[in-house]
Length: 407
Image 1 (spheres, one colour):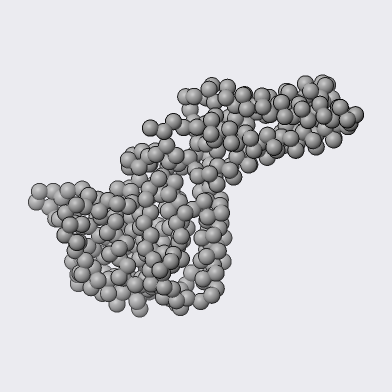
Image 2 (cartoon, helix red, strand yellow; image 1 turned 45 degrees about the vertical axis):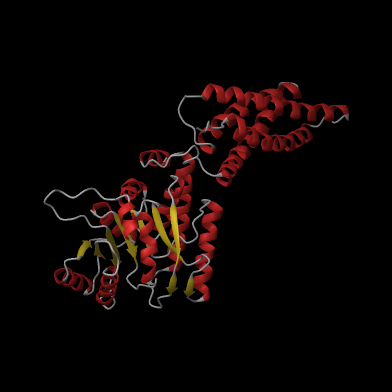
């Protein structure tokens, strides 16, 4: 352990010459009306922190409790120098974590539920990779191999279904978004927290997705976890809020509104693909752009077919939609913005357009060779041909048109 401490890259700023020593761990416990469990839970956490080789503090984040929780929290803060309390006027786990994490002077910021469902023995493997500088975010997971979980089948199904939904929509690679046992380096939190909009239960998911898209390393620790039978989470309302959050974050990533690439660059984690989306997300966005382009092509072809030959109508419709398609994919699918390289991208896109024109024109030639002269049949055949060209277009765009030079 001494070797770990001596080689660790500090996550906190140096203390003033005559000021207090910096705190390494700030363990935040958000609470709302927890007068029964608060004191014994804080005592257990303090006892466990005393076994770790780092300076630490427990912060109670009181989410506008209406029972005796606030009074008990103040008593604990007066009784122990390593306990403090922050009172919030509004409820919300995410709001509490934002408030405390953004103002903490600790190097590593920890969050755990007051019921201590997670075995505290997982705390050391949770924070050690962050203190050493190996990882940026750490999460406890109930769904990875090695985890031991005691909970009912309903909650197990909901948890697995939710994380499967995240993998299918936001292409998340972390295994468990909602386990109440997480840690983050302070420098990373300062970059990510301003981008997180949710103040409630979706906060965890949003933070992890942004961290992952910024190219940050997320360390996972399989935990021993026992379900709290007194949980007061409104499952239906939380599920609806989570779905809305997934849609919002997905749109923010695809539109470029969330500057995860800039975050990666500031933290020194930038790579050629940081913020650009993995293959699955690129396929999804390309498909949406392709569907819109195909529909626009069909409409343009029908409009132009009334005043031009099928070959000219096909040429003009395909050219216009190809230019728009390249511009849309440049920004939305491959995350490229600004004018730099835009002309070259369009020129390479026109080469791909030429291949598509050859395929669709060949389809028209075959129709005429067989004596078919029905506009609707022409549209149907050309639509199918364009779908095939779309697949070719994606491969060409990813491998050539928008390929980023790697150093």
